[in-house]
View 1: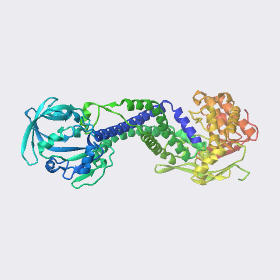
View 2 (view 1 turned 90 degrees about the vertical axis):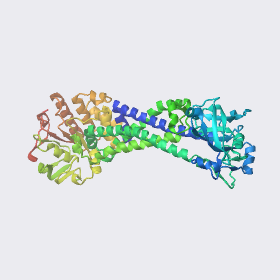
View 3 (view 1 turned 120 degrees about the horizontal axis):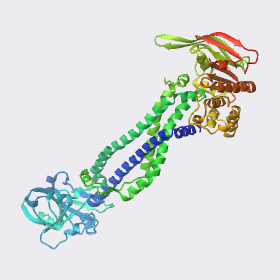
View 4 (view 1 turned 180 degrees about the vertical axis):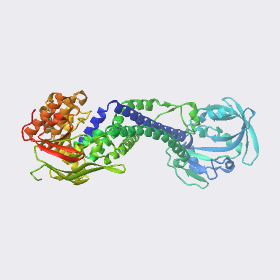
Length: 390
Length: 236
């Protein structure tokens, strides 16, 4: 126990120098945990919003459906198998018919995807109930991004032109019945949501659909010809790949923070060893072995991290709890981030994150503290007493 | 260990490389010291006093020859064994006191005992005894920065004797002290030598110290010039 006791005494005795290091390191602790918590919260939020508004509990895709190739849409529809129709009747699934069209907002030409959906559905968090209307005009629901890019607003009429299943061109006016504010760009950009019944009439493909969205938590997994079951892991693959890219970018920040903190510790250790050569000589003359000296100096460095963790816990805990409960506001511009971000991100600080970060900082600090002390192993007591470093 | 001597050096030579040439710091030193001696290595700067003291204290080893200290051959000791020898049997007093600034007087004196893993109650007793010997029991909680030079050197003496060593090596112990403090320090060490039978070896060129020595070994250019023993009690 002599080494921890001496190490504590020495760093406590170093006064302001110690506290400056400890405070700098504690900032790193809090910042790393905050950033990671923010990423965790953002990922959770985005996943939840995307599942709620887009993927539900998984989907069935028509075999010809390729979301990356709109030209396949003409053939990407088929009759809904009986088992799935039963789920739709029980409101445990919702069919969506996707069709390519051209719209002419304010006389401009623009490609768009028409998405036919049951207005009464409750499986996706899309306000489709606004599509229930007695008017003859096609009611259309668009997202705020689509509204912005087309200049359309609630109550506006827009001409839609499409080709039915036989290839015949047709056109009609649609009325924007609502613009929805959504965090999920994939239900917004370039899309018009209209009642599926109307759309089936427009395309002349009654009772068909492109995809079927299952309710959340659905275990339904039957196999059908022409239809493929897509589970959430598959559907979220791209999004999770995007998370990974973003978190690699985010990691650079915390590696930088960690690097700066470690530089301070390394610098302190090098300075400390240089400044305390004579003290080291005295300790050796008093009978301390080189290995004990190395332990002492390494522990002194590592203790900075322990003290920093304590200091960080004192001010960081209430701060992070507050941010986790009130959320962290993000500017509108972050909408172009590629994620379904809300106005506020609610960071998630898990025990694993906190313990993992603490251990990581402790281990890295110990290694960084140890590196300069290796010089002590070559130190001759007589040189140290004379204030020389060999 | 041979009972007739505590330290025996045979044909010790210490050579330092100096660029392309070498410096011979010690040349064929043959000396023995008995238990209870109060001896001094005297001579001008560069005569090899401190080098010899460092070899006797197992802080350095000879380039040639042999130094036997308390039955151990210094030149064959591992770092760990040398540290053990210093910790248990040898006390050091330095010209610049070398007290540890962040520790109190008590903790500075306690330090060698901590390295020996002596239990706390016994440690406390030994530290207070040592501080009483040097007359600083009332300054136990002071920090070195608040002590005078004389007081600091007395703390260093207490730290050297607290473990009841066989041998105390003092390198210019009075060089940073005024005359009054120098005499005070030397009187304390004479008393410790006489009452506790601790062997003292000094490296000094201070005339004030020389007056107290019972044996004076004069070194010059790394060689022993004279080895004088004073049978009569020194004037104090």
